[in-house]
Length: 431
Image (cartoon, rainbow, N blue to C red; front, side, top):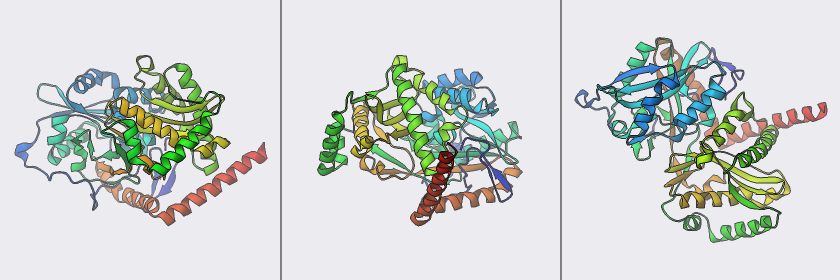
């Protein structure tokens, strides 16, 4: 979560913002990467830890301009905007880790931000829960050959330069991205609480839809869209102007707030600076047709029936947030209809894959049937960080056990809904 006020005591630690708790061990079923290689194959590099994003920009552009790989949540503009509107105003300091060769050319950039976890000082990915797939920027050949010894060497250099940091806590990491392996998987890691759902496109949009859903379901969705098409101004639209962005986000924030309140779930979009960040990211690059965050919607006059947002690296479109109308028109499955339009659009634009984001929901498997495992890791830098690992492990295991046990998760869901309804009733009574 992004609020520094959301904390609870457990094992003597006050847990707060960015509670993607991780465990420093490798469990059965984790990503299988090559074993530790001999020192003769290690990469020669030096690490520099920067506190200022602007100082790193030339190196970032130089590395991104090569054959490099990074998930889109590790893009410079996404991170710059997040820091401008969210982490910066909270007083959180960038921890930008750059590994360079002997000539000073960058080999990797890990853009992290310093945060507090009780007495501990951590370095985490920018974006908190809003950044759902995180692989830092690597030169592709380095990502594929970096050994666990290299990774330990990098951590040692970081610890020497930043003795104030106790841990790297890195959540939601894919084992591979764009064909390149994630070197963090050579170190201790475990599966995240939620896995991801992916669709490999590989053909035209209509053919993909035909492959993924049955003829009966396609017929049902066509009939439902015919009914929606009778609404005045019915249309599928990818936001292309500032007016589109402001209109769609206006509906989105209203729809999301109402749904989360009813479910008793804290609204992560209401945390300080997040709405401003999202607006800025949807507008940045829009005039070039390359916004940092894309918006896709089904609309009619006076209402937005459904919205999906996403971020991409020209190869994969990864969904970010979504919502749908609470009106009677919701019975016509506008979200599924919108997904069809969005996937067809991605295919037309040449994307290789589409993912619908981590977390289990029935609608996700209509189109995205390939499960992509994602991982978390906690990497101690100090003795205090090492001492905290058992408590962090216990917290992570407890949360994972609940989420992966349908009965326990249903109980948690019911309690949350009950509390949400109670809160909503109190608010209504107050009115």
